[in-house]
Image (cartoon, rainbow, N blue to C red; front, side, top):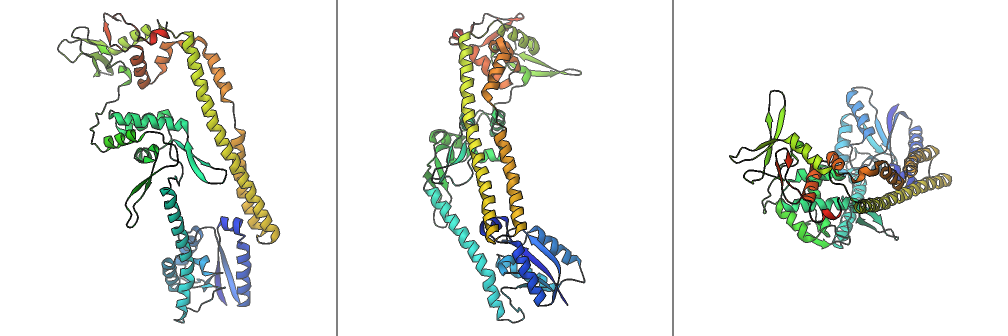
Length: 482
């Protein structure tokens, strides 16, 4: 008696949306084997595309067949040739490999005796037809996407700084995600100065909340989508083109072009080294003897490094960085924010939270829409089950997958908190500390420490005799600090 393996392939989407059933294929193949007196040894179920043979179940079966020197099956049976493959080149190679194992692949609804040369013409048709269908669909999608780009539409996932949305008629577009967009504006502005390398700007942007890797960041800052242009790649005799985007730009074209010049090294960037954490006043201190700017560096002792602010001239001025930093904090403790500034600060933070809440609400709305789609998916599968186009086991598989996604989305919707109440509680807990300059300075990063020094004391500081010479706050800071 001849022996066969039954190969059954269908994707989850085909089951849910078109009513294709693995059980139906299984029934047809078993009836065929019964009529032809063929013994079924194994049934292989597949849930992957037929564009290639890189499919888990098929590769597992093929590995076993290669190891088996004897007792291989006589046939591998499937319903139609498009269940076997949708790539004619790969299909011919696989047929040749199987026949080398003395195994005959055969479609029971499109049977062919491959020992007859003329039947190879029909085999070519059966294999080429699904591949042509795939290629035509792919080409239509390609030209459709290219036409959309020429019309100024972004056709893929929203880049950092934007969010995917849909119009009421279902047309998709990208809208500005203000929280992420603000970080990208900052990154482009910093890069345009030529003071910092891209990697350092990326690290600062990550600290601010951007969520992308270094390589992706390089691609983002090269993408003209941020200044409102869409790239149409070269194709055949068409050169690269740029279309005016339908989305709102985040930066100006001038800023984008300036950044590209810096990246192309037409404008030579001046690399500014990162300031060590213990020398955050470097660049703000003047030498009390020669009036030059003090620099700073570590000096290696027997066990530790010791940090100093020192003059690069022959005057030999040098101060321990730890002592200078402590004296500067004592100077900050003499000043505190006025009630007016504290109120302004709280108002700005509340507005930021409101904007963030709007983004959170939009994310909730998207989750709610996805939840509805999964529920509709279960309903469609139920209708197909009732109509007899879907088997019970397939319905339960679709339902279990959808219910898993539904549970995850319901959790997203349930984990909603009121950020404003948390903010007000933190304001209450901080009390008077919210106006304490020294407190915020000590917990700030090096970058923010230096920004605070530049804003509070726009004139350079002079340190001598264990203290700072007469120091005045900047004109605008006198209005908001006591």
